[in-house]
Length: 215
Image (cartoon, rainbow, N blue to C red; front, top):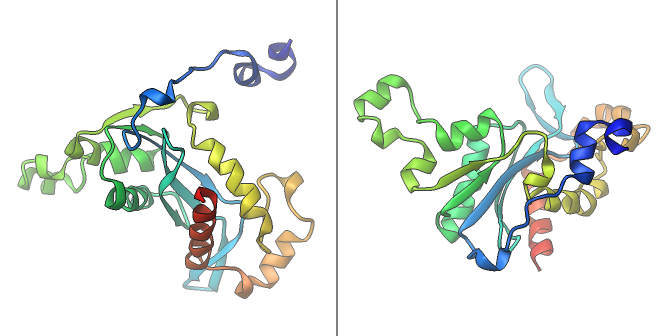
């Protein structure tokens, strides 16, 4: 009935049994899950022509599977490999490297984790091994997830909490869908662009929100 009424994707989400994982058998810090989300908040970023422009920034997170702790994160104007690496660096500086990473699908994650860094000429100069992908260099096993199946990434659960805990309380809240967007959000953020938070200011709010969530 769900398949006929709502389609294959809704039926898979609602009716197909999901993998059950025994979390007590996983050591803290051994498995991490990577994922990102476009925040439901408008921020301002420098623009060479206009001075400022509006964007919805991307938050990249690193979740420890056992403890459900957000061990690393980074926020940037767009999703990119540098943001993924920055989030992993924040996590590894404090907790070291994991043995397994469940990675999101996307070119930014492939570039950060699996693809060799540098140009072909640089890799030949350093015999390739010194410019290898991050996962290979650190002996991390990568586990890609099935596209368009959010239940395959346990980090999605903390994104829902952060949306209610942080996004909805910002004056520049944009909403994840047109139905959720305040009726004057477009005009308000356009006319008061100098009052929108910067990426650094939003990053500080996220830091406080993550600490509060962990407490």
